[in-house]
Amino acid sequence: MWDLELTIAGHFRELNERQANMNNALSDKVQRLTVGIEHLVEEMQGVRTGKKEEAFARVGASDASPDLPTVSAESALIYTLSAADIGELLGFHPSQIGLLLSAGGLGWAGNGDYQELGRHKKRAQTKWWHRDLPAKLRDILDRNRPGQHGIANKAVLAIFRDWQSRGPQHNLIDASSDNSTSH
Image 1 (tube, rainbow, N blue to C red):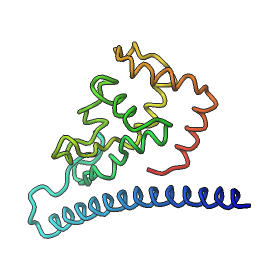
Image 2 (image 1 turned 135 degrees about the vertical axis):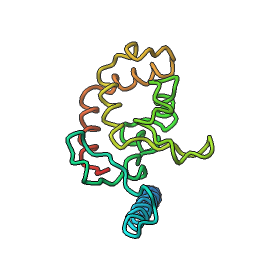
Image 3 (image 1 turned 180 degrees about the vertical axis):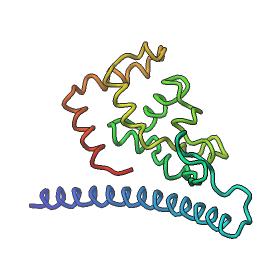
């Protein structure tokens, strides 16, 4: 009976730790969203009062009316994922994702299409990646062609082998969990 109680207590302790981690991650995302909304409101206020020269950025399609201003999206709303978030979605450790996304991996480190560059003041700060990156990485890993990306790093090649060893069933499960999350 004592062993059963210890097992149940351990299970609930683990669940509480997971919930605390999820709450911390959610709190961080809400904070970044709040900052993005505050910046957007400041820019709109600048247009209303005429105090900012360029409060709106034209980022419309080429066929969009030039008279219709569009708001530049706040990067914190687009670049929402850390290496830990991506690792959790794909089943890898954050350091493996960092290696895969580095200049020695797929060569995406510092690429503004994938990595948000504006918030990094120090080298050790969290890097934020585009919200569509897990699907793109999943596609690259599914194709299993590291040579196509010029990859010779043995640790990165091991990530490709690990992904393939999981089989298509595991990859489909990851894809369905990605569709259930909203970023």
